Image 1 (cartoon, rainbow over the protein chains, first blue to last red):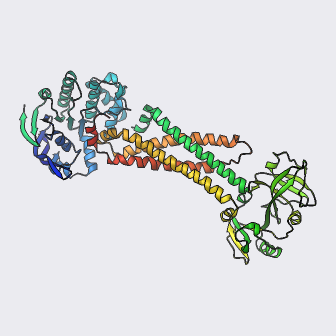
Image 2: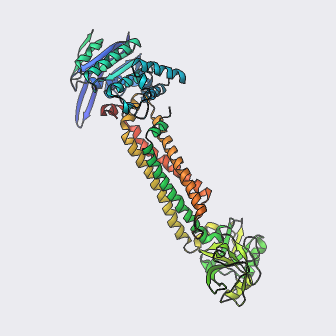
Image 3: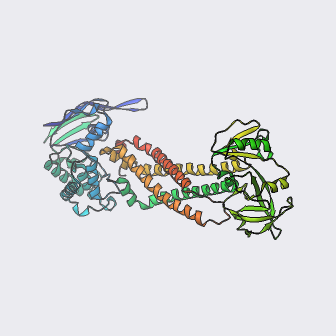
Length: 229
Length: 343
């Protein structure tokens, strides 16, 4: 079932007098529970496409439909609400809040998503998820005392604690070594399949593609291939 | 989730530095304010302690009460009309104590009134600061222009004029010393200005400003106080700005995951309020302690009203400073923060 539709999306940046078209009419749809990888060389437009789909920047033309809602015509606060409640984010760097413990990072996300859970239910959910990502034993630790892999595990837990429909991951393994990258990808795959979360991921690491269901190859702002595995 | 408190708990040193700066600036402001009020009392407590009303001096004195002459007929005319009205005169002069040591005083005489102390001829009532200089009740004091002698009848608290202690003397003694039966001023408490022929009306504030040096002294001190208040506001803005610049990446990520901008503002305001209130509690306590232990000769008066007023101004200035520095949060694009790398 299609959850996300990207329809004729174009993005143009102005560089002084020169206009540069980064996305040249992209069409694609994401199915529920699928992990889709966007791959391509630097400057192919994959990260721009991901951020437009996530409502982090507007498209110059075209539309992004999520559950039949058009993100491109929504007001800023409506998009923010959607990001807080229905989307999850994992970035190249973990970007954890430095003054919050591991447990508090997840509680903050529930707070942002305006979770209806009661305090004790929230704590239970946090513990459950930390157990799933193997970080339960570090729940009182601050980010400064975590390793890169541990930080990314916490970032993944934070991205899915509020049970989003879509997870956007922008090079989630780029800052990790190959062993840690495989661990993180395996974890992402397990979690998104268990929780039926649709994932759109940008990567340039070909090794990581073995963990995905669909691969979209981009070049110069257009989709070259859209392959389902 | 109380992000503001959690950040302060984790970064105690950073916030303690900001708090200590606010404490130092507010403490300095309270001390300067205490000195300004103290000097103001030292300069014009005699006038400032009077209730609100109208001061009248001769029109041709042109705002200089030393040159004002109000004759007995005009005094009687006003006093008979206004029951609480009082005619009085002030002259700077000297009293010689028993050791022939000269004490500078402001001689004050008035018609019968509850607003001024009245004494019999050959009696004098002094400001208590002279008691600290060794003068006691029953001492005999003299003045070169007065043929009689003054017996110290007692002391009154905090009655000063032009930085000199007040000496209340009788109308008869005053007439002999200054060879004038006229009074310089008439004061009518709790009244609106009346049109009296030959007299010019002044409100309490207007009259205080006619006192030589009072206005200049207060203007200078008030200028220092307001400069300090403005500087503390700028310090707030600069410190929060610097802290915010360091946290732009973090704010961007928080905005990307859906945190409302208003929550980030609430976080800054809460931190500002906690730091300011904490700093103010310490500086108010210390300045009030100083109010008690300040050396007796030092003109220092710091009322709870003044400290409360200044504290509210500090909170307001802090709020404006924090808000101005927080304006950049509104402009932060989540996308930029994501692309910047680890915060």
